[in-house]
Image 1 (spheres, rainbow, N blue to C red):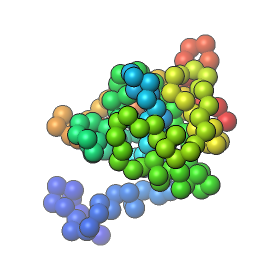
Image 2: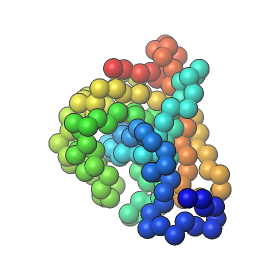
Image 3: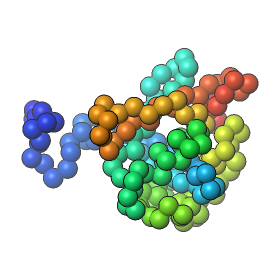
Image 4: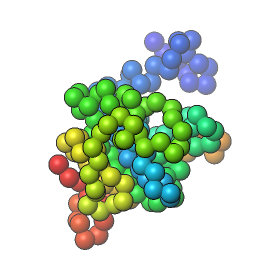
Length: 168
């Protein structure tokens, strides 16, 4: 199959997510300025640099209540997030956190996940997740300024004295 994105593909859903495999799911935890924890899965997530260590996720679309998604609003307000690795054993909870809920809902509490404090950033970690990437926000980039699908790039360092890091 060949298609040019500008001309569409004629399928019920975009084939892009099916073309790039295997694709890790970034389960991003953030905290709002009011202290509300947000946890959401992102299939457009990956590592994108090693020195300094960098990860990115793309909160595509809009929040059900209108405006940008909580994960983007929160990271821009606080400058921090945690990428928790979603495992097969956590798949049902992860899918539940993909639901569109009100901004004042803590998704970790909603699905009964135990939180644990992060070492270097304010957003909590999913305790049951085996890997947590504690990250500082670098910037937001969009290929088109009118895009509803911004790309978030965040940077962390394994040097605990200079910035966020990784735990396993």
